[in-house]
Length: 297
Image (cartoon, rainbow, N blue to C red; front, side, top):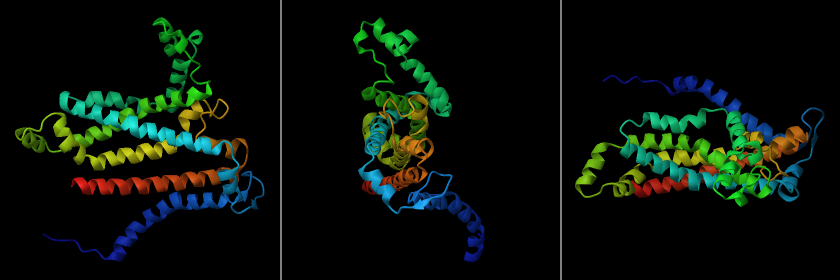
């Protein structure tokens, strides 16, 4: 067998262009954002360097910021604690009981490929008051639960949970597909050997499926968590962050500060905070799953 020997300089010459493009598209904008966060700037005119004043304001005197952070982590928590377990359960059921599962998995994936604007407008219609054709309120009235009806997107205490439900529905099929693919890649011989030893059904899932799809499940967790931290489009389509900032998250608050209030420097400080949180979350999740993977391998 002939092995092609290539010098390190040759490898570097081929890797360098892609590396430069990656750095220019990812790391340079992050550094620029950090620097912009130290400016008093409206994004158009002259800027004034103010150091860490924007960060101090963000952490100490912005009445919207910390509630927005809390709602962002609430989105992430619901996604990881409700959406991912349901997706894993559905993926296990499909792989076990459905002979030709591709169509079913594709059906679950359909909401992911729909435009967020379409989804937002669809669910706004569903959440409408009964007098405006809102399906949920009409169903509650039909079954005699009229006192349970609400203005789902205009009541501050309810609106964020209405949006969370839509997000869980939209991306459930995405995680079903990821975890179903991971389950399908587990060799059938392992299940057959376990069945001989008396491990079948959910017992086999506990001792075979779950440990062997840890790397795949980690991908779902990372994507779910980071995606929740960056939630923006669905919220802006459905409520715009209202009512009274009750559905604002980090990204929507950053947008409002940067482009509506024309405090571009302050918006960049919020963006820098979001980048740091995303990086820290990725490192922590990778660390935890590395330890978990070592425990079961």
